[in-house]
Image 1 (cartoon, one colour):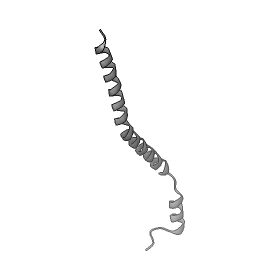
Image 2 (image 1 turned 180 degrees about the vertical axis):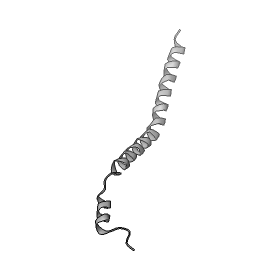
Image 3 (image 1 turned 45 degrees about the vertical axis):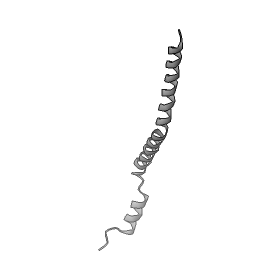
Image 4 (image 1 turned 90 degrees about the vertical axis):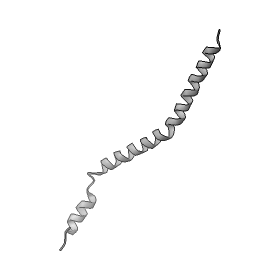
Length: 61
């Protein structure tokens, strides 16, 4: 018993309806990886900056 005919299989292979969803999912995954990589260094830099500002303000008469 055949489930797919040759024409049906070709039509299935050419169907691009779900391609956009997959592309958006890959884009979201790349953004999530970038955020995970860069958030900690940015957080550390900002914390160091405010610590320097606090030290400068406490050192002034």
